[in-house]
Length: 256
Length: 233
Image (cartoon, rainbow over all chains, first blue to last red):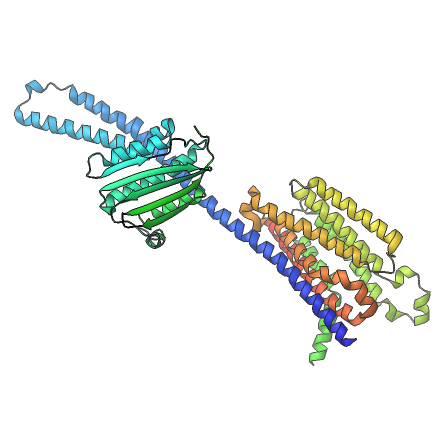
């Protein structure tokens, strides 16, 4: 009888432990999920406020600073140069040149911060335009091979993808010493595969993992946050021909 | 010395179904808790306190009577099964109402159906199969555990997708559900086997009931935490 009682006691205790473990596991799974979602929300909030700020600065630069500079140029052009001596003519030309340069720079910064081409012509056109603009006076052979069947309903996604490409291309131009740069994309089964290839000095996956947590992490943290926001993944690989950055993003698309 | 300590602990545990409920009720009396939002829980605590008090009194009543006089007392005074069975039914009713009011999810109709089914099951069980007065109903309590655990786990799964999940630890409902799920998880196996244990292994049944009481203490502590979060809001 005692043995039976002990057996039953053991069984009940095992049952209690199993049930408790089940409930605690569900609770822990829920808490883990909530924590992950909270982190994603923080990232989303940070990225969103960054875009709002960029847009605001771009608008201010274009509408206010740009307008003032254009007005200054008009006033300068109104000066009668025939009455100026050689020294003053030189100063006038220099001033006009500097003013033209700053107008171009302000326009470039404004477009960089907020691309109207992205808004009006879509992601592919924005990437083509950006790559052309960044590499036109350099020794780099840049090319694009973008899938034109890509069209998305979500402009926020496009902005994030564009920013990732911007950041990667900027880093390559600054640090990689590459002579060849190709940005390509493939759309298949509602998934966009973006590949940035270059033949310079790039990052491996381990280096990327390490650098993105550093203070001067080349904007890699920004890239990582945007990829998380897009629910995608990013992979750095290197082969004999060069370095490849694969960005894989699930998208809601309408095929053209 | 060690035996004396164990005896004292056993007495404390035996009456824990009463003093554990006093913890959240005492906190309720000294704090500005949002009573409207927790009315079902507060009502449950008061009813549970009353029922458990009666249960504890009835357990010790034989000490005041001779065996002959004890046997002449009405059945309701000689058995506390009806208080236990009633406690289970009240718990299901009030906590189902609490879930219905505070969790606006897709299963509202299903929860109402489950409540009606549970009450129907209780009625049929006590009319045709078991006496509610003389027998602690293992079936009733086991079904109660399954129903409550289902509501709790559904709440957890829903909590992932709801917007409110941003401050889940500050929501009183989270703590109430956590306490209820721990209590029901600990008690399920005990409830399932209790009638059998009482009949054939009485001392083991009493020993196992200690685990139930521990689960109940934790449940009441979590309710107190829920009251605290409600006050903070």
